[in-house]
Image (cartoon, rainbow, N blue to C red):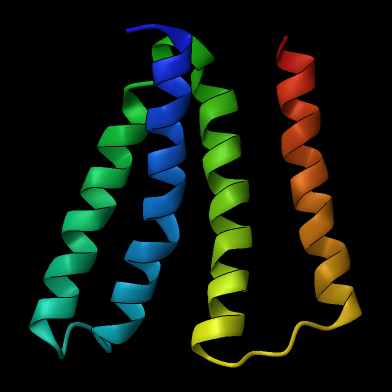
Length: 109
């Protein structure tokens, strides 16, 4: 595996992050077993996908990207799935997350 493949796997992990959180919410504290099982499977798959690129990208960079993209993804999902309002303040702080991710990547070389 090369660094390019590692980035693709990290992107998959970043996509899985908001997916498992949404499934967890839909499970309503595991009252709906299918959603709960989906959440558990997705979180384990997300963590597995996170563990693969750490060798090429580094654990700190990988996790910070996963956390930042996952947080932004949840906010975006909240807007479309739950009709949450995106205020200028929320957009400002989401942009700070994205700027932080880009900054960390640029500093990592």
